Image (cartoon, rainbow, N blue to C red; front, side):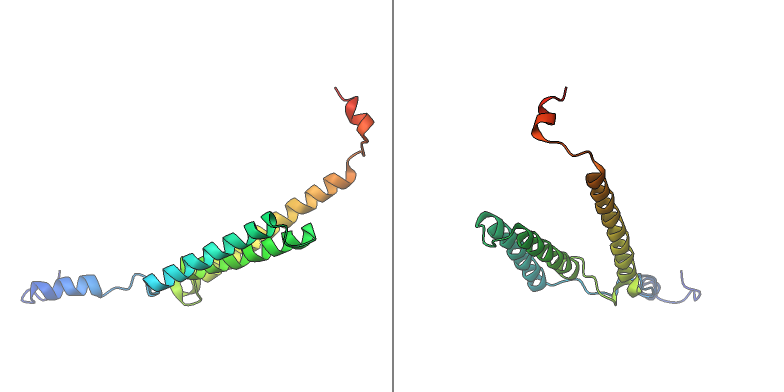
Length: 135
């Protein structure tokens, strides 16, 4: 309530509802921005399917690199158009959380690939005859 007992009720309600900022300074997207994000997402999903199904690139490694690059671009499109992430939203905390998440994902993926590589390197080689004699 207001400290002034003679203040109008609507003034007290107005101060209660509009006097605070709840950290939602970032504007939400418009229909146009959501449609732009959706169309970009569909295109960035269709291109990898086309690359694989059409056998467009001669090398499987080049195809895999292209798909991973398009996946990274699609992540950025989702963050910008759907999650509304930028350096200004939530006082920069969303960007800090994103950077932290990227660091954790890179550590987890690098560690997983390192372990799998060393397991593959240190496994006993097997030829087809050895595989047929396995129980």
